[in-house]
Image 1 (cartoon, rainbow, N blue to C red):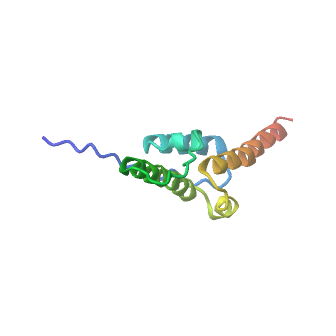
Image 2: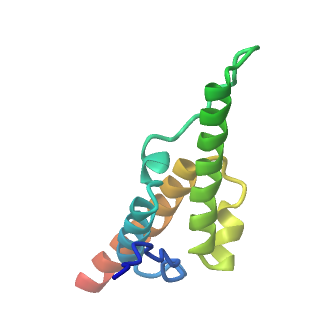
Image 3: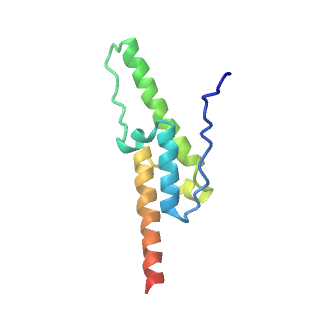
Length: 117
């Protein structure tokens, strides 16, 4: 019996600015499942290649650049158009992640404090 070991990593639900904590957990798990979370966590900076790079160096450079674009594509796909227009000019996945955290996590804390008083 043949077992299909391929797992579908569909997109996480669309984040529209509400329930940041839940959306952040879902996106983190989604990126971990795709083996991309470290790109956000380590702020993946790809240094310029030397004048005469080896084939191995070229391959690693290309892979790192692709991973950076994959993470941004995942985040872009998981946010509403309104949020996308606010993050589309940010340079790195880490910059995007930090922006979303600062903007939406703080909003939820403010709302929570307003409801408790």
